Image (cartoon, rainbow, N blue to C red):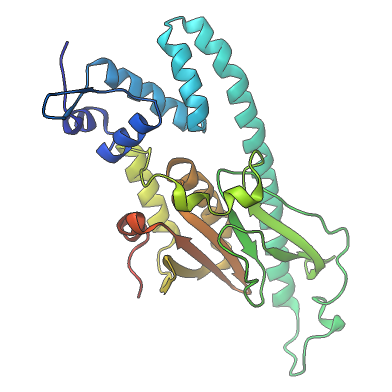
Length: 297
């Protein structure tokens, strides 16, 4: 059986060496050791990584992938199919719900912008005649489930919540105005307690499960989404200021990013015509954060 070192396996599979080490620590990939301590892999590792990559592409969590790999190793395709079908069905339902909720939130933002454009310019302070201070009609809460915490807050001062916590944006009143009822836009998993997930990014392994074309495609999408952003340093990360009409694209990318790189923490703050995106990472992930989002201005 052909044996490969970790660098050779990374080249063959397109999976970075850091991710291969992470997979080993997570029990998804095993390696033999030479007397000198080098990792050695057989040809079966290439097929295993392809299977893991396909499962990741379906949005499965690492815990689920570990369970699925055990079924796959048994060699019965029908068993893999039976195990995989309910998992895909669950992800599909979550994705459809998230898409509907984000679409509703996008519509509310467009309505708010349309209302702003229709308002006359007044020299006085805002009051109920502006529409923004009127109670919302039929306000509803929008909560989008995803891989990790991403919070969005509407125009106004920062809420002071810690990273990953929930913030609120006023819901649109009739005619598209923002009202007093909150619309929570929190991308967070429903399986874990909020207290546990708030700091999850700090202890997550600094490794990305994307590789090859997937990594290049994700990087290109981020660079397009944050093109022209104003950057400023924040504790443990950076803040990017963008036009507010990019909120849906940025939120979807942030949710996808935490599937493959859970060591990133994202916060979205809506401030009138601006979207402020704060991205944080542990000290070991600082270089990766700069590679993906660029340095501060």
